[in-house]
Length: 387
Image (cartoon, rainbow, N blue to C red; front, top):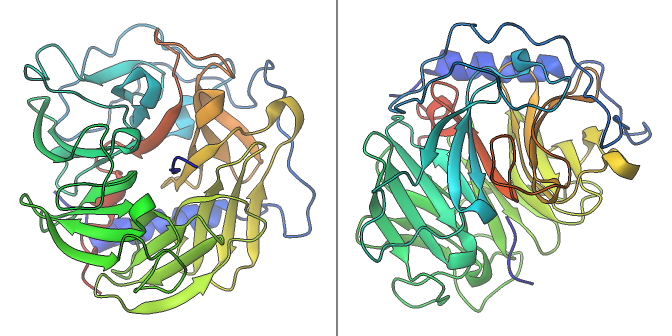
């Protein structure tokens, strides 16, 4: 998110995008004042929690831990705000968690025996489920590595980079970010400080856009510290670049379709698609914000609470099939769900400003995804890389 300075069909994806677009009805306009939510220590605004005995959703290859007993959500959280379990990259705890809507941990990596002798799992910056629901790609940006994890066995099957050793030569990366496993089996990643987008096979780089040492906004020849390459419903990708506040739609062959500045954003992070022509980005700042914008760079919706309720370096916002928005609020040590209809936080896992490792606590959570069938790459699998 920052440098050191079995596939669902098209109908399902379209329906999910339509639900998100509908959820924006009644949201703040570009001229609206900043939205304010409750103070950091007040209960969240939401409906009473339904019974924890609600039917579970399918979770792909995850071997789920028991889901009985109370969860560990912030007071007032509504489990109905989420369509299913949430995968959290809990960076400073060096772990991945699958948390259900009731706030119970259902899966954990690394588990006992997951790492071979001498093998490390650096702090995970983000994690995404593969299009077939069988693997997770976890990027350890601060350790300059990428790992592919088999969910069923809980073992690392592929590794890229040299732990803690940044570089630009063969096999090296410098703050890679948001790596994703594409339907064809290759890994797509933004290599931030090398100012490039790379495609990786099991043997190494197969395609590169941009090049180390040539940093600037001139895609596809140059990129200004890219920190995300997210799939779009038209088969292209949305490239976010830190320096200059740029977002570009382009293909992996290098064709650029449009470029825009997310409006009023100081540090753009991980822009992705809400619906055709509408995009969402996190502002990795303090106070932070979540902005939905058009390809013309116009505000559609902005969530920017102030005071004690301010976001603190949020780095990823994902639209949910029900119209809500899932956000990791990194330095507030929490994962939240925002309702654009009410401009309120309606679900929260983690304690505001209090890092920890016990159940209900997180420490700098820096990435989220949904469990299958609603995971990002599964909902885009029919079109990813195939315009």
